[in-house]
Image (cartoon, rainbow, N blue to C red; front, side, top):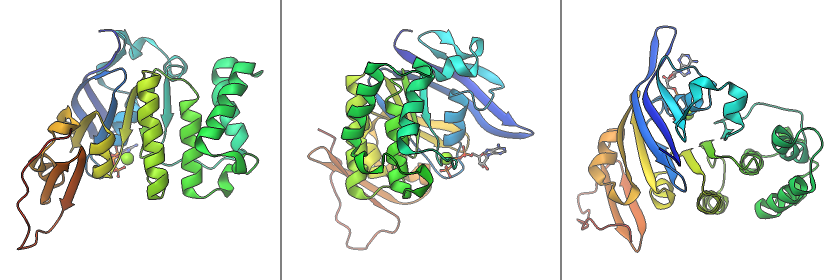
Length: 267
Ligand SMILES: Nc1ncnc2c1ncn2[C@@H]1O[C@H](COP(=O)(O)OP(=O)(O)OP(=O)(O)O)[C@@H](O)[C@H]1O
Ligand SMILES: [Mg+2]
């Protein structure tokens, strides 16, 4: 199928440990797909399998009908931008990180278009004051913004982000999620993002992928997610209701005077 990333019967094993089994997904261009699920479920493993950092033992991954099996890691990474859960230390300045992510396509000498792209993303992400700072000298949140900007200017067909807002304050979280959602639509790529923040996941995601114990247990439009699905994903009580297109979520213990909310849908 065109315009899709297809993940077919993917099975991943390292040494004797099975990390993923029977993973099937068909993801469409322009959709922000958010993976949620408990720690250790296999979320990062799935992202690493898609970008070929990890080998898959069974199954296949295809972008626009072309199997990744026939492509090496460089060919795959020319189509996919990936931001890891935690970034390794590096000795680079912020501007170097941004330029590097264009060099992957343009070679050592960057074009005028590359510099325009870099200039625009610097403004969009408010990175002006960090440009000549070493990446290791930034705060965790500042670093996340730089790596997110670097992933987006690669102009990928698939953007893969592993917990991209985990170190950001609430204002930066919604600013980054707004950018991710808008770029996914405007540039019409496929975005796959892991988030632990369920409120944001439901609010921003077009589709929600629930991963538990090595398997996908649910793949739905975010507005079709209900309390039971989240309760059984995390094995905790959960109450979810929607108001004016915003999800409201209570996790954990219930109060004896809890109001019973009508289940309403995302508008
Ligand atoms: N290289 C590896 N070798 C063996 N086991 C691994 C390897 N990498 C991860 N695992 C195990 O696979 C399981 C899934 O790990 P993964 O990193 O995919 O979880 P996750 O869903 O991303 O969790 P978190 O929410 O904590 O980031 C874990 O139990 C982990 O210990
Ligand atoms: Mg992870």
